[in-house]
Image (tube, rainbow, N blue to C red; front, side):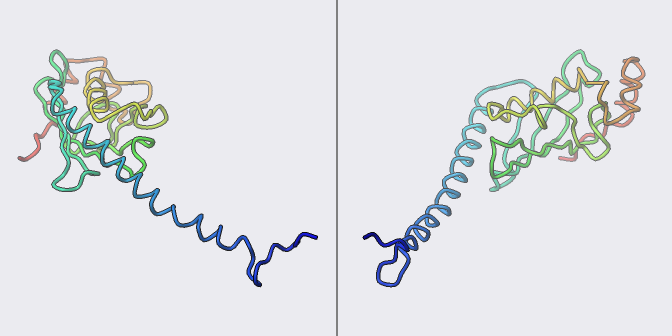
Length: 180
């Protein structure tokens, strides 16, 4: 006859299995953090070696999860000649979740609010783990010259966008280069 309660020496037989199953969890979390670190280090190297004009980003001091980026306004746009500083904050589950990206330099733009928040689909619901820092910076640089005026964060900028001459004057009036 089999033992229905599955006890051995007055101890439930399943107890060791429960204890053992909890052991790998901290190790898995460490591995995930390590893979995120490797991914960010790889992206940094690609960005440095890529030579894309008008974009750059580097970790803040020794903190690989917080980066400072720079975007230069593209030629033949109202943002030509401007330089914008950005902050990029990577979650611990990157690249499965997008980084938080904000303008640190004030930017008068239909898709940027007064706090520097950016309305860009790839930073929200259209995020894919295939994107990287380079893709993000190039997308934001492209957004400067080609805003989505149908989904503005800044209604005044969206309303002015159709008159590029007046819009450029407003950009020049409000643009304050970041202190070095």
